[in-house]
Image (cartoon, rainbow, N blue to C red; front, top):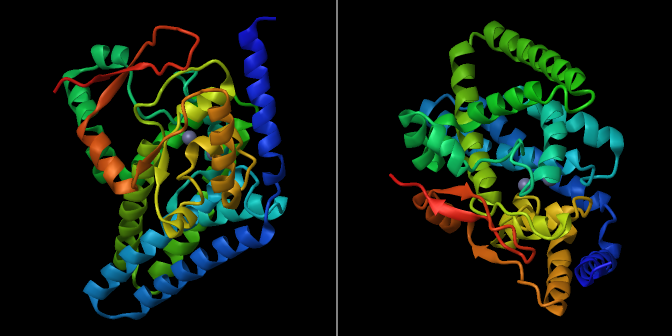
Length: 344
Ligand SMILES: [Zn+2]
Ligand SMILES: [Zn+2]
């Protein structure tokens, strides 16, 4: 066996060892996060519907949308069964809170597994947002324009509806790749129809149908903006395959430096590289895991993981410098694929 194989094995073993005691799900930490965010959101919804003033209704609903976004991020933890450790809770709750926004959680949970397996490795990755140079070359002029303004278009125009449609389309296109995908699609469609019939009937009987549609659209816009931004930040301009799956995940994901409050709201996704490397480590242990992994990387003289400063600053910089994925040179040392600027 070559030295390199031994080193890769050694790194994998050490990474496993230094994070061994961080995989235990903390029921209290998960329940507290889920309950606090849920209570704040539901209180704001109650407040919005109890005010007569339209401006106040819109403002409070917008704030509710912010907290709904963070509440929905809990569904990502539940897709990995790392929020509470209760199987029933992590299966039922994400559907109950996702379906009112037309969010096909069951499909998402399936394609998210593919994302973890394929990020940086297989361009079929269903959550890949960055376009390749080949795709750009073959695209129509209107699509090329979209690619060079992708961040703004996705965040402010496509928003939540864009994410919902993309998830449905990916679910349908991976029907033959993922066993049971068809069942998940049927489950989501049935659940969404059922939940929406209930809310629509309620709105009609109360004579508030227009207000309800406005309420839903405001939530969709706010959630779309926050989720699309987070989605783009996690991997944009980092595509690249390294010597092992573990190292690929460490380097093909973005960590963001932020306050502990924002980190808590984001469910630890500011440590996205750590999450991708060990998806069974719960959110509250990710900062510790980050430090432990860095020490192993340092020991083996590998590049340390970076932490870019702030969600807004990073989003602003990346959105102003759109880039495309171009093939790497195939060398065995950590080597990101070339990112070439989109010519406007
Ligand atoms: Zn990811
Ligand atoms: Zn994940």
